Length: 455
Image: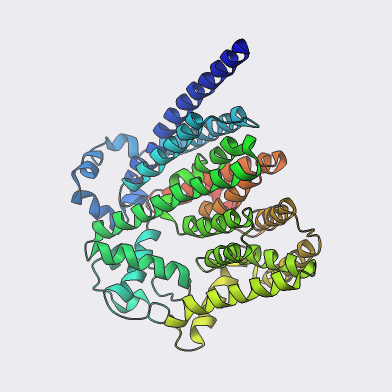
């Protein structure tokens, strides 16, 4: 017995050492994306690059040799090399932890490393991502200007101190974000006041906390349903390069938080709270609405009428409560529907968009018919929906849209799903960063042509 315990302890310490080495290497690679790539000409052309001078730490980084940040072939090579190495390290960590009953110290190591990755993104250069400024300006429509952001766009306030830094492709829109996100966005905007940097950091910190919450929920779910896969599940989500580099700057992280919260309550046999979480997730972004719908469709399919009716009432009540304070007229519903339909099939030719939408409905109904009441079958259905969405609908340059699929891969860590998830997220990670960095302000000739033809 003593010899067995000693061997177990040795294996545990060996895994911890391996994970620590992998985490250290990943932190260095992710730092490249947060602190070097934003200094390339394409990112420095963004208005938010002007905020670099607002903090000494950012200003010091801006002093890197221009020969490093303006050489397009060098940057292209670094994007490809760092992406490949990061995904190899990530895959190695998942492989080493597969079917491994983790010790508390190992779980803390995985959680702590992920927290470090997310913390680095909190302090990333201010021009690393511009979507977050659009979130801020939209929240400030209500917080600073006392207007309804579901009817009045950020373009109505061009003198707002954060407005110059937003992505003006989205500032005319009023339907691109839903009520659950709107309510949450008010808090950091209210705390930060008028300063652009203060707002940036407040929103990043909020999203950082949601990133940590997602990892804790995954750990809690897996400890309940599959303890031997807890460590692998936390790694699948927390260390994935897409999540590590984009999680603390995208609203998708909040959408995933409520999705996981719904699953957390589902595995604890609290169906009403599960529906509440799933509904809030769908009303951050509609991407998860089919997942919430499949959960309820399962109850109707199995003729569990009481549970189905109760779930429907909880969903309807939640939708009413969070939307009613913003409701003025049907324009709110129309704008949300237009954006949702456009996003769901935007990457397809117009001739195929309606066909794809109808095919999606048929897939949804088919998955509902196959439900048998089991948790695994439900997660299989969710994985099928999101995998179809990722493979056939999403633009490959929108890596953050795959965060939901990554989360499902974590709580349903089927070997085949993970084997698809890793190369899929690798491809979208490379193409997303390529599209962000290269363009008219930083062209790359043959490489650029090759990328454009692939898109």
